Every structure is written in C-alpha cells, then in structure tokens.
Image 1 (tube, rainbow, N blue to C red):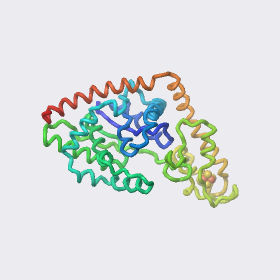
Image 2: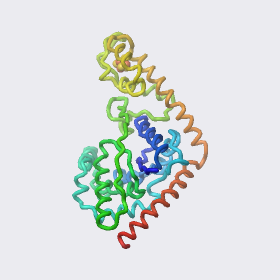
Image 3: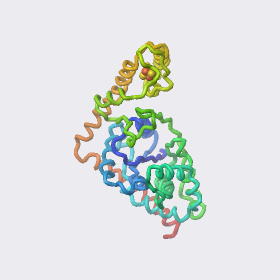
Image 4: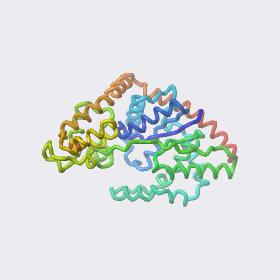
Length: 325
Ligand code: SF4
C-alpha cells in the first residue's frame, strides 16, 4: 500500500474552510497508508513568541480530526515533536542543502513581508529552514505521495531535490514523492476576505446552531439589493459562494431567482443555514462523543507517536548508516 503524509499546524478548533481538506484525508485513508501529524514545530516558525496555547490547540485540533472521521485504526495520527527523529533528519538535510534553494522558495519573501506589515519579524533561521523541516517530515516516512494545493508545489519540489541530493551524495534511500493535487474548496470568510481566525470571519466546524445562524446572517451579500425584489448579482455575494459548493444542483435556479428578485437574502441565507446545519450536526455529535472520553485524544496521539517512531527509526538507521555517523 502506498504511503501518504500530511500535517496541519495546531491552530486550535478548525473552521469550515478546513473541512474539505479533512474530508480529503478521510478518503485517502481508505486507499493509502496514511500518516497525519500535528505540525507543532512548524507552528514555532511564526508563533515562537506565543506558545501558550500550543498544547491545548493540539488536543482540540485532533479531536476535530477524529470527529470528521480520521480513524486511528487506519491512520497514524501523531504530533511532530513526539518524534524527535524529525529534528535529526532536518539537521542532516540542513548540512547538504544550499542556502540559495531555501531563499528562492517563492512563499519565503512574501510571508516575511506579510508578517513585517503586521509588525512582526520572522526572519529567523527556523523560518528560512521550515521547507527543509517539511522535507524531513515527508522523507522520514519515505512517503510515495503528499496531498498538496498548487501553492505548496514549490515546497514539494524542494523536498524532492533534497532527497535526490542525499541519494546521490550517500546512498539511495528516499523515494521521489509525488504531489496529489487535491480539489479543496476555497471558502471565503463571512466578510468575503480569506477565512481566518485572526480576521474573526470564520465559521467553526463545530459551532452551535445559534452561532452558525449569526455568522450566516452577517455574511456580505449584494450591496445593490435594498428591497427583497431588487434584482441581485450573485457573483458578488458570499452566500452564493457557499451555495455553489454545498447546493451545486440547485445553483442555476437560485441564481435565476436572485437575478430576477424572486428570492430575498433572508430566505437565501436561511437555506444555507439549513444546509450547513445538516452537514455539521453529525460532526458536532461525533465530537461530543470524543471529548466525553477523558484522555482519549491523548491516547490516540501516544499510540500514533509510537507507530510513527517505529517507522522513523527504521529510516534514521538507514540515514545514519549512509552518512556514517
Ligand atoms: S438572494 Fe442570495 S445570492 Fe442573491 S444576493 Fe441575496 S443572499 Fe446573495
């Protein structure tokens, strides 16, 4: 069975924008041997000065993963910092990776600038090297494939180059992992900006019905619609972007009604609320069951770390032998 590795930073409870990523992971675990990890060391690269919530966020996020259907019987679910071999492989890779390879990763300069505009300096050694830590994460499990979005392809390419360089310099150990381009639906936040907790425009996967209703009622619609029967322009409306994903079959009819002033925004939002509530209710219930089991999430992570360490120690034995250390 081919192996897959993917991870997420521990940002705490997840929002609906993460749902399609998790649904993709859930499908993948039926076909592949999957390793899913909480990238807590990665979180340090930009949040090194705000670590207070890391542990709690890890547990919250893994509870979310389990509620969406990641199955610890099928997949290895672990926390990166529980498997110290990641740090060791990162260090070895850092010895053989030219600095220029890291400096040319397209997202590096962009992100440094974005953080600078927010008044934060992330030009640290760790941030420059984080694509290399990613390479160590992937190559550690000699993964055959990695689910990626288009924006992550340069990172995967760097990972491949590092693996090839190692194989060429020492002994061929690492495969060339392929990118599995996943179709992830990009949902905007309720104010039409990118969905993010820091903008407070995100809808939590597990939010209660009252909160869901409040968030949907706050969604930006077509500002040209004052009265219920004013002709609308669905293409500028956030609600429409959600209908596009969650009610694709009814979309042409909804658009026609909006354009013709046949449906008001209140009714249109109510439809969305019903749809989302239908999707999120079983997930909420599953999460309640998970958190009702004291220590269960911790157990999943412990068991996952033990399985991940076994695979990692096999790779590291080969690496140490190849490097002669
Ligand atoms: S009717 Fe629906 S799609 Fe049209 S502007 Fe209102 S909320 Fe948006």
